Length: 220
Image (cartoon, rainbow, N blue to C red; front, top):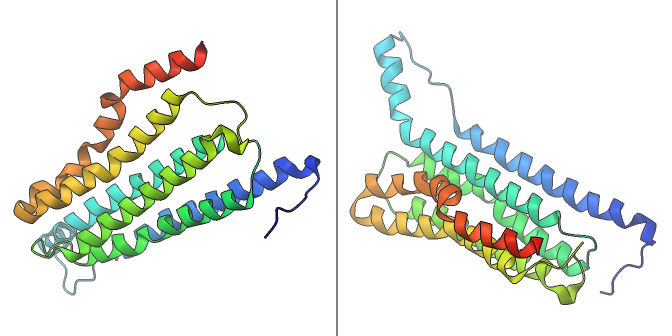
């Protein structure tokens, strides 16, 4: 299908529609994560019974916290990517939809993991969750490479190769840590499930040098 010939004066309106729709999808996905939490119903409740019930939800709570920040992280990445966009194509719209498809799957895979969170000997729920994270990262890479390609002429300004590589490094940190986590969980379930908790530290401090070099290149 050919590109729609919209008036140039409507360009920013069309870009805003893409961004607003994407923000709405992220907002719904991040809200759906909490639906898996149900208030414990205990007959003849005591503090001890209530505490035991809440403690039983510990792994589910950890999964929710990690998923919340994963969705939030990819929203922030999406926000930064579209900050460079000054034009759009039909292919960009479909690539963005495929990326959002991987995002809206996260409440399901997170819910599946949460449902069996206490069964640490089960590998399928965590495996599906990790595959979902990997799919989201792959679609993020595809979207980033398409937008940052100067031949597509979608950018507000040309992005340095260092900045493009930095975006790829940041994207690959999350799925790499989850893949390592899954492999580790096959032998050491508790240790493996805790590995993703270190992702914020790596994103914050592990790539500082690369981020500084990319910024220096862009400021030249």
